[in-house]
Length: 589
Image 1: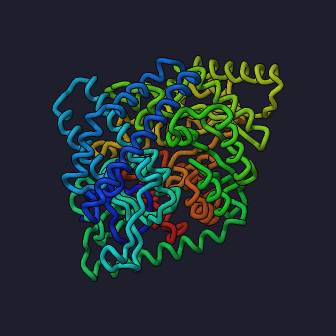
Image 2: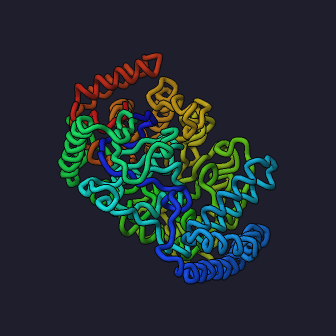
Image 3: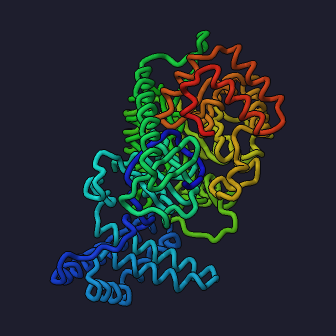
């Protein structure tokens, strides 16, 4: 049994599919016959040639879109692709060990990483990242698609069991591509409640546990494992009695989910008739369609960075406009809040450069990165404004810290509108602009910010980690990022009170919005707009239909009197059991 961080509720018994964070399967793959080596070498050489041609095009495009300096990193990548040492060593591995080209690339990268692991200088660490990016590019042309999981029946005879992805980490680009695979659970060694694995699993409504140290060393592809996403447990090769007990829990969990989704056409309201808006957080078109299926009334947060993360180079204005337009047209009621780029931290793209930072989550990221690349920022604002005429669209700015920053972005939006009018380009004149309150400084100065913005979205994920000074994806301190804490609720009450005084629309779009215990208190504190992973909409709708406004207000009043997180958790756990015990399975302990 392994203990980790519960990041997506539910229980699943399945077959492990262990993957490497770069190449898919972590076990080296050999060729069926030695005579295949010639064809495999030729296949590798074609992938190298295509990668070189692709990089030449990217260099030209990035230089035009962002500037020559920003294209330098791809010039470095082109040099690596054209380095004969890489080609010679991969050829030798294919020939001597009869490996597939992908496995030979993997072994080459592992050897390179081992050599550079002993070197501490930033230059060499950045060089390693460049080599890794190039290997990934070549590998993508060898596969042309994400790795396809093996058939469970062929793996160990348990053909009736679903697949559970087990990985050290899941990168942002992988999180999007893995969305098409038949995965029923996710386990990772790194990350926490807001990692890419967590976002992927919650958007699909599948159980997941993160921060499970050592799990990839204990699990082999084909092992039977159990993922308990409520208690944060992973059981490897369980005995038959344990397996049988968890299969029963699994059936109950998925049967309840199936029943709850039947409420998709019902309005979201409390048992005494208070109207609530339940919106969806989305990353891509697939999430948009999922939001419509579960009954969300709109998209409360569209994370545009995933378009950039899965794009081989910088998306130009026209590409962005077309993608945003499609998102809007597919969204429930064509209602979408589009967040501008929130890159940085663990979400990086090569064409914006790399910086070695001791604390990247508190450094060069999000709106700060956009300020440093004004042409890129303006292009995104133009695309959002143009797409805004296809529905009811809001534009949301992340990580605003000071009033000066807000005034700068407001000025930029107005200048962009004037430019579009002058050019005769149609756009949404009524697109509203808003601030994502996720930095404590913005929460403390909320009254000043409300005077100069149309709406507020509370990003509880970052707000929590900045408030408690703890990296939410670091397993050693992730326990401090507890949403059910006195400090969090007091800050949220301050922001909600200010919005109510001024009549400013406010939405909470962090993970708290999909957690039943949190929602009980937040509803009682006056919040009426919640945005969450699509899979949680039916659960929160059912929960709110079971509670009156007066009940929730009593709950909130008591929560604000309590002094510790443990007291709040115990109190809200009891209240959830009292209001709707069947929904307890959808909240982590």
